[in-house]
Amino acid sequence: MVVGVALLVGLAGCAGIGGSSADAGVGGEADLERSIDVSAGGEAVGEPDRATLRVAVTATGSTPEAVRDDLATGDSRLREALTEWGLDEDDIRTDRYDVRETHESRDDPDREAYQGIHRYAIDVDDVDAVGSVIDVTVDAGADEVQQIQFGLSEERERDVRDEALENAMANADADAETLAAASDLDVTGVYSVSTGDASWTPYAVRDAAVLESADSGGAPATGIETGDVTVRVTVNVVYGAEA
Image (cartoon, rainbow, N blue to C red; front, side, top):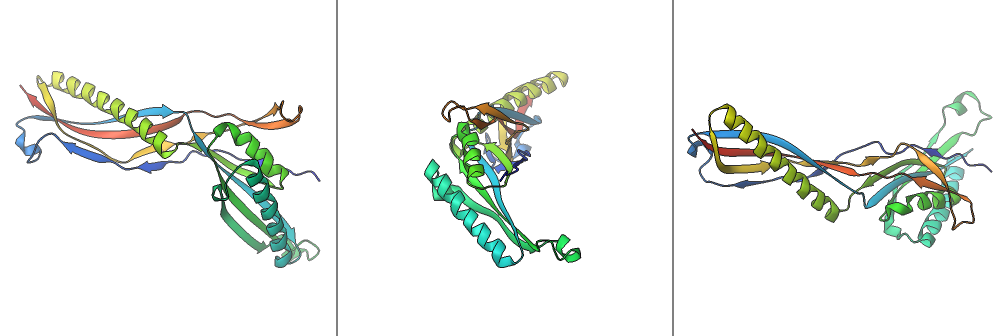
């Protein structure tokens, strides 16, 4: 049986990262005789070190029970194949489960009346192994590979966010100096600084390549191109100034 695999990957999303603030003075901005307020953005990129795949097993049948049984069989095969490959059970989560009557069966009683889907979210810590995991799921009976999202682990995310904050502060300093020069002022220093929520954009994969795998004796293997993940932050800085 030939299984058609639909690869629909990588709609970029955003994840929130908490903000913070720091004061270089007390009593509020009213303590300053002159001030320059700047809001500036900064970004940094980092190589992804994790990926989440969403794959689905589908089934059709004349009764809901038949569809359910087929999905249960597919579930066992998929989980067994992935754990044998090296993933933990905790890396394989149910993302959607649905069994329903098809619209076509209402007009044509000879059609199979029910269809079902069991979709999984599969976490992979080795981004270079994503193609291999896809091959394992397809060989185990998965009918669809619906999405692949490359992102950052918590530790890597913090490192890239720190770099983005440094870039944002450098941009804020440059803006403050420009504004001061245009206003016949001198910047005396930072009075207060804060940052709002940061966001990161997962890398969007748009094409899958079929590669030649030496380990599989020349059999075709799925190759997925990866790219950097972008983290963006905004800082709000109040600078003291004097004429």
